[in-house]
Image 1 (cartoon, rainbow over the protein chains, first blue to last red):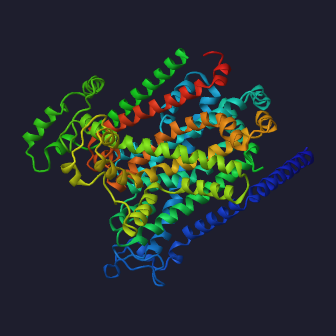
Image 2: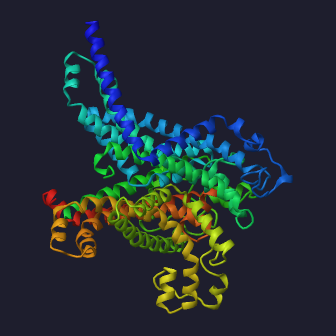
Image 3: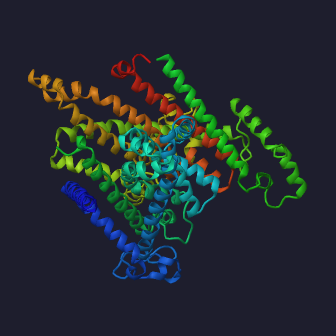
Length: 299
Length: 341
């Protein structure tokens, strides 16, 4: 029994490894996707080591330096300094922490709300399903940014509220995806088998169906990381997100608005940081989609 | 078709109802006293009490809710707490300005995006195709507010070709007053032959329209390319080529027909996206539209105005979704598949 069990396990692990190897190979066949992976890895490193990497760590934390206002980019301040004399490169580096953690935290929170609801709706169907679908209908009729703006404007401006607003705007999408997956999975033989031996509904839902249906949601979520960063930056830009002196990229661009005539570097570099980050996530998302959906694979 | 439309209209009405209700409830539970804002910081407590009665805040929540719904149906959205003017009037002033931006940018996105997409598909896997794809995905990843600033830096503060912000030069409002016909400023100035104003408006519109259209343009190009690539593999295209038709005719007369439906649907949906983006872009260009209205309302916690803009956005969205559904339903293949529903 133990031996045969081990054998199946080994065989299964081998197959998984092989398929993941082809998966990775396909993914990296596109050189842009590979480059995007490298950039994202670098960004994570930058975020983790921000206090070490930033040339002026105190500036990143918001300490002002009035004598150094509006210095042009130079070897001393590669990205120049802002209206408070802070080194923009250091602030951009510290901003990496905020943007990456916003996207990760909100996406995970949205999934934690969406997955149980979607699984329950898809599994039981009927009345619960109907209610959840009508609620998501309302959400899906509007773009996430609009919902996030409206919710954040009711909650009041702060980074935490902006994150709550993004979670509220995002969860219905994942609920829909997981519900559809569960509805298809619950008719499969392994579910009937589990039911025959008397497994409880909850156990079937969360330890049998869920592991088999969660992949599409995770893939969708990883494609959304860039979009979430963009949404959070937009909220901060219109004053509904991070508040000064937080070094959030959208907020830095927003404060740079007043000075675009005199200090172009103030708005250009933090915006460039948003662009590079979101672009990398989107390229990875595109690469994933191409590999997973053979119809769109490059011919 | 009738049944289908009726069902869509019902869903739309339901969505609107939910949005209004949720917005109203949220505004009611938020810890901010509208009466206090209404009378200002130096008011006496009697003035505050009077304001509470004037704004109807002394009545129970249910009564206020029903009143709001009844008034909303009549087109009355209450008074803005900041400007003390009716929200409906402020919206009516702002909507045409936003609408004009959205219309022009969607039109630009459609034409340029379609062209770029077709060209990219036609030159598949050449350097130009790769560049156009990378360009599209970069544009989609660019924050629109930042793009707006970059355009300002290049075209206004460096080259001095275009005005930095605003809708038109203030002087012109006095020297060449605009007669209102449709409410859309640029259209009005063209209809009434007020060319000075038209030219000035157009100059001010270039940068906001470019910024706004970029996202839809990139999306259109990507979508056109991928659909066209599939279409070009179909038998009827091979047949058309076998007949010896010119490549241009095959592309623009035969293949394009199967692309345009989907692209138009997507554009109707992305017009909504452009609408949200105006909220951000208008802030950069000080454009007197809905986006500026919501920015001002949010800053001052002006809840009647916030609810007003929310309701407007909801209506716009429901209508756009309806248009998209109708465009899809007009496709004879869809009608067939639905069995005449």
